[in-house]
Length: 288
Image (cartoon, rainbow, N blue to C red; front, side, top):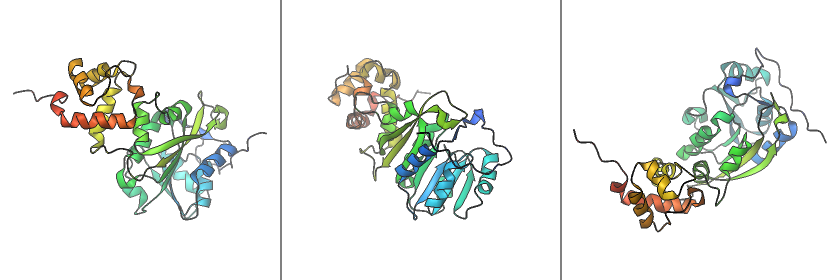
């Protein structure tokens, strides 16, 4: 059965996708429906949409939600979007970069919202982290389209963990809703995509205290992910393997394990040991 075509928006001053911004317009109506179903929208919902493009998904969002705030990095698309959709009163368009947009300004006092996005491949990870690490400005639910390999990495479980998986799963529970073939977009990308749903936790999965310091340890652990943990941690922190092995011993962890085999609980244990023994890995100030 052929896919339903997305509702064609009105023409604007320029409709050609910009390669530099990773623009691929979703044109498959069945995929749009999958996104909307996964978002479970009701008439009182507030939605933040990233990358509305020509508004194929936005058109449905403004019909289903109380308010829609659309963040578009392309100034031409941002300026023309309201007119394309007949200027719905519940649509606000923000011309900005979703990787560092001020969420207080975007949300205008709204206490809760859902994130719905067709993310550009080059910026999917930093955009998601910006929203998930936003404290009390985190969404209650995120439904995003991204490159299939990235979605698989974000939702990976034990034995296949990555730095990205740890960053996403600290704040939410991800699952792939469906795969999306290249033909669902115009222009057709060279890779497949996937719709990912993230049920955002009310509080982080583990007690990390200082997230920046926690990810300093995790990032170091994945510095060279194919190496044994003691070697990767040593390289990432710039310390000797003797010190990294000692830290892992204090955490009761086998230094020969691979980083991908650690769970979030394992990283929490290592982080807490590292915080209690900062002299082992924090560089000492150079004397003047």
